[in-house]
Length: 126
Image 1 (spheres, rainbow, N blue to C red):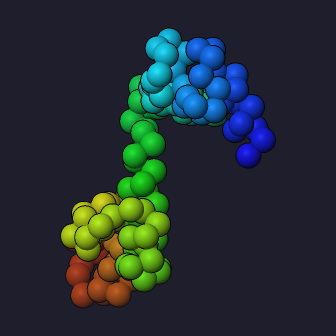
Image 2: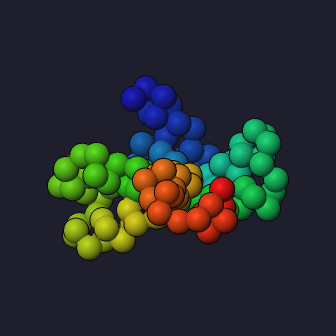
């Protein structure tokens, strides 16, 4: 809390606690431009080895999809909606209906293990 109060007091427009905590450096009475955070996210991704083009695929909203996709089915939908802010079941389903890296390969491996003996080896890529 002290750090947030100090940040609000550092507002260059002299607005102090009456202004935005995350203020615009450029425009008085405005919140900070979210592109600043997005640019920092992408710079961080590049720092850990992603290319500039690859880092542009990531957004903060994408983390909401990621979280929802992984949590769906692991906790009650009502609790998940509280965490993600989705108001309806249909939106929760829409945002959780993403292929999680490796899911397709896991399903394919299980299908081959279970049903592979029913097909000739050349049909299943063995």
